[in-house]
Length: 374
Image (cartoon, rainbow, N blue to C red):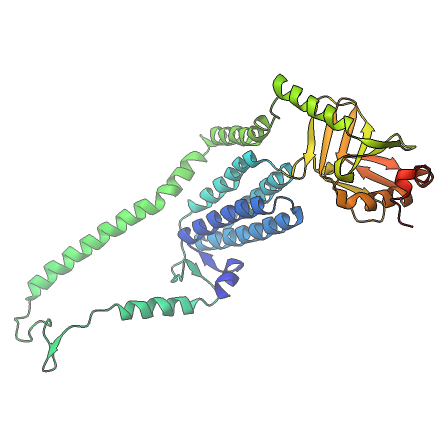
């Protein structure tokens, strides 16, 4: 619980490894959960807000660790939130390229060296107590410590007390050698530590700032354009189009009890007493607009909505020559006929239809009158 609480801490410090792990984890979690809950936008938006909050908090702790305050605080979380919303509402898997934008801002924050000298537990230092994790690490270290064999209470591997002591000259030589080695290691570490900062200063100095901003803007435009460039629908080949037209013609021939209502839409019965609703429209391509089996297509066609009544899912919606054909499950036949008879209107695929006079029209049909439950 304390570890989770530390993810939302605002006043603590995150070192570079922890900041990297957190940002990588929230991006990976968002991608996996977004793919799992594609049809539940409210759930995916909630997940996105949670991940953005964690991203904002860790950016704040990273800046606290670097003792640096700027508008970069909002850059990773803000760009992650915007790109996440684009991915959710476009529904394009190729739009995951946009996550490179918050990744870039996270890398930028990593170039600031840490200046907090306090000790870290799991890469964190702050008001949230994570000492339990430190206790576990100490315990495991103590358990793995080697126990030396003893004889008559004397450690066999311990140096003899009678061994001659080193001279002061030897002490001085060893001290100087160890000091030089420590200084060399410190210099190497400082060089590695400042490498990222040197790159950032080189890219954003006065001379190269415009070039850097221009390149980044170009990459941003490409990242925004690529999902839409590769999202064009696959063209229908003549062979597939002939097969589709033949199957639809066969399906039309099997329709029975066609009845046209006042708002220029028709209902008919397909196989297994399933209801089909047809309305005329200008159709460019003969294709399935929506199918329940794959959950792909125009989301506005996935259900028929009556006023003040629970929506009913469509099985398939096809665009054929002169209009649309919406197919429903035989389990919903009676519910559909009852709603058409007693409701005022319904909407489907972005079209709205009035049901004025529908009860009288259905009552004149011997077939549909028997399906109405009064």
